[in-house]
Image 1: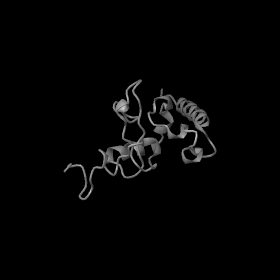
Image 2 (image 1 turned 180 degrees about the horizontal axis):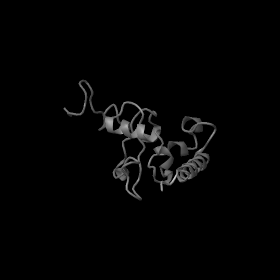
Image 3 (image 1 turned 45 degrees about the horizontal axis):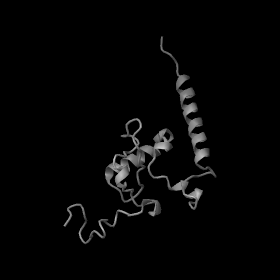
Image 4 (image 1 turned 60 degrees about the horizontal axis):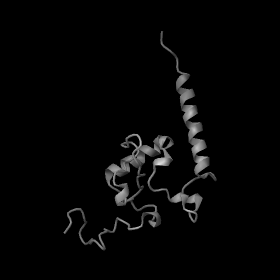
Length: 132
């Protein structure tokens, strides 16, 4: 028995109940398990320059993954380079944009919004007083 499996859980075709063999069709709450070609993907806060990024799940995830999710929710999401995200189900032609973006945005609209947030943060930071 696998020590990581909870009592009564069993692997089926190499997957536990918390893993999904086709990550692009998994429920949003199910954590992402990277395919072999994306094993080097890291959470945004741990990714090195040029390294593929995996986004954390929201529920039923390990504590470190949930901590990463909370970090993104506290403003770090605006810094994520979407070009490096290994799983982007919102790019699927059949995906509902509203499942991934709010306020009638799409990926391009989100990128524009992130650029505005970064610009505002920079301007706000530069308005601080200089102590003399």
